[in-house]
Length: 151
Image (cartoon, rainbow, N blue to C red; front, side, top):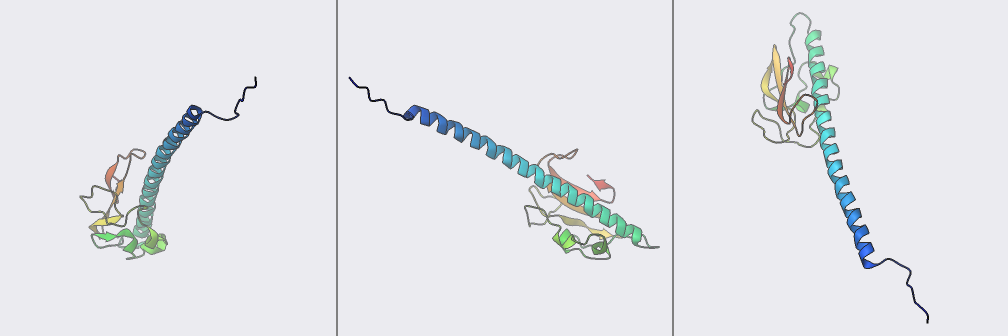
């Protein structure tokens, strides 16, 4: 009597392997999405620090008057080329939030593009931006950059 043993996987074995692969890919996607969010937030904080440095350099360069470059309220940072800010931040025209084109306001409740929310004056400025998650010592939500730093 001959036994005909088939060489292959049973249906149960295939289902178990497919389930494990599905679970692993789901976990990988969740981790990837969190990494992307953290990356966008890190870019936002970096952009604000770079903008603050450029504003302070422009302030220091304004001999005698000691004034900040002025920009209209509710204008996107990338549209602000007043004064000599572009001298100290050559890529200001490309300074945009990585995932939103809508300008931030003082009441924004979602991701928005960097904007001056108070008219830039000779003595100060206010730029508003939004973080998706906690980054360093900043919590998720709306934040401002002023001459005093990031709040």
